[in-house]
Image 1 (cartoon, one colour):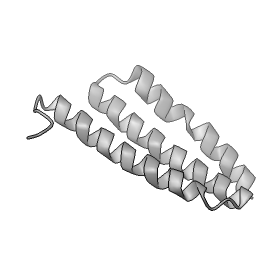
Image 2 (image 1 turned 90 degrees about the horizontal axis):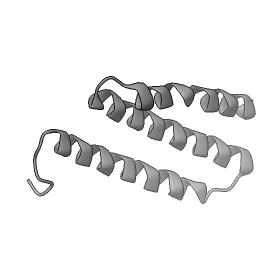
Image 3 (image 1 turned 60 degrees about the horizontal axis):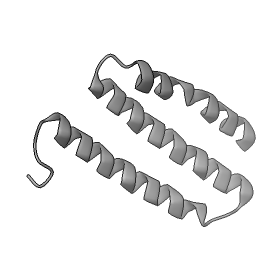
Image 4 (image 1 turned 180 degrees about the vertical axis):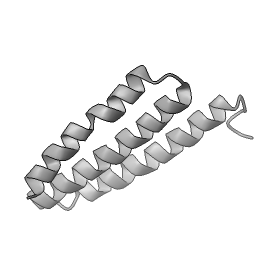
Length: 85
C-alpha cells in the first residue's frame, strides 16, 4: 500500500516541476518550489515508513526549515527589500 502511495507521489512531482520551468511569473515558480518541497518531504516520510529508518525524520525537519527560510528570502527579494529589514 505504501509503495503505491510512493509511486503516486513520484508521479505528482511532475506538476510542480512543470510549474517551476514554465511558470509565467516568478510568483508561480515560487509556489512550484514550495509544492516541490512539500512533496519531497512527504516522499521521505513514506520512505521512512517503508524502511523503518527513523533518522530520516531529521532530514525532513531540516528540509522543511530550509524551505521555509528560502521562501521568506525569495519573498523579501521580490519586494525589493533588504534581508535585514
